[in-house]
Length: 120
Image (cartoon, rainbow, N blue to C red; front, side, top):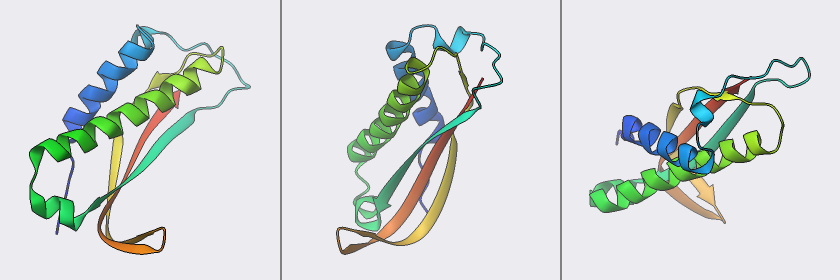
C-alpha cells in the first residue's frame, strides 16, 4: 500500500509554527562561524496500514500537524540553544514500507523520516 503525506501542507504548517516560535527566523541572515556546523533535525513517524485504510482525513490532518509541530519545536530549540542563526532548508521526506516494532508489537505500515537541514 503506497502512502505519501501532503508534503506541501506539512511544509506550510512547519513554517507557520516556526514563525510563531521564533518570529522572523526565516528572514535572519546566518552568522558565519567555523565552530558551528550545519545541523539536521529529524523525526520518524510510522503510519499504520490500518490508519491508511480508514481514510480518515481528520486523523491524517492531525498526524501531519503533529509532524510539523515536532519539527518546528526541534528547529526552535536548536536555534534558541546557540547564539548562531541557522536558515532552515525545505523539508525532506523519505518513505519506507514494511513492518515496524514498537514495545514488542509489530505494525505494518509506512515509516516516514522527515528531515530539515539547518544551514549556518
